Amino acid sequence: MSEPRSITLPTIDHGPVTLPEPSWCIGHAGDLPEHRADILHRGPDVSLTFRGQHITDACLVQAPFSTIDVPELGSRTPGVSVSVIARTLDPAGLYELAAALDGYADRLRTLADSLLVIATEGDL
Ligand SMILES: [Zn+2]
Image 1: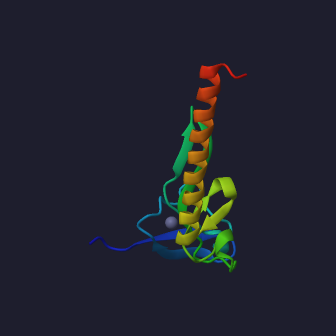
Image 2: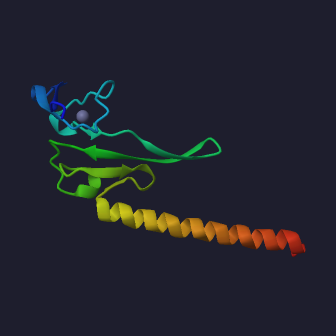
Image 3: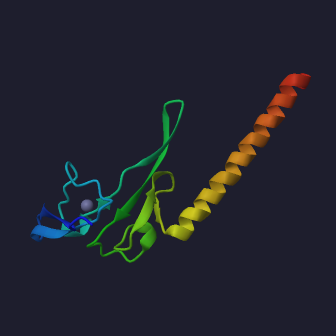
C-alpha cells in the first residue's frame, strides 16, 4: 500500500495550507485556489462527446474546507460533479441520473425506429 500523499497549497487567507491528497485527485497544477475554502480535489473527467461535440463531463470532487452544507453545490462530502446539470451528486443521485439517461437512450432508439419506418414507407 502506498504512503498517503499530502499537498501544500498557497492561499491568501490562510497562507500555505497542507492537507491530505486523495489518491483519485489529479492534482492542483494550474488550478490554485485563492481562499482555503476554494480548495477542490478533482478526479479525471469522464466526458461525453458526439461527433466531436462536447456534451458533458463528470468527475469526482471534494471541497475539504467548504463552508457550504449543501452536497449538491459542492461540500466536504465527496461527490460527482456533472457539468450538464451543474450539480454534484451522491451515489443515489448519480444512479438516478444514469437511469434517466438510459431511459432517454431508449427514447432516442424509438425515434430512430419511427424515422426508419417513415423513411422506408415514404410517409412524409
Ligand atoms: Zn487534490
